[in-house]
Length: 124
Image (tube, rainbow, N blue to C red; front, side, top):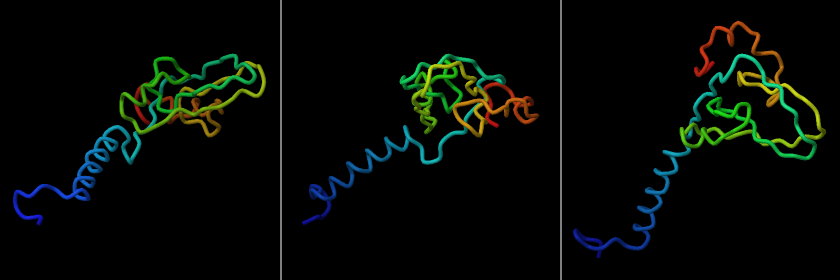
């Protein structure tokens, strides 16, 4: 049993199937996520509506800044958007340099020399 040319036992077959799945997952969800890139060097002011849930782009690759359009998934960044619910209806400045310490809100980090010297589309 188990010699050359013998069919795989059920346990070995399952192990091989898992390897196939894990390699597929690793390709789409890398263990080390990509770095966020600078989308813009200024924040975007938006009106948030109380009780509405938003998805803020973390990766910087979305074409619908400051919100997520799914680019992180199709570009296999390993990053996910930040989901948040607006507590009240108001106009806020959302970060697009992706270096804020208070995501998703702008904290002025875009004014730093590090961000201003970076190219749009490049990681910090």
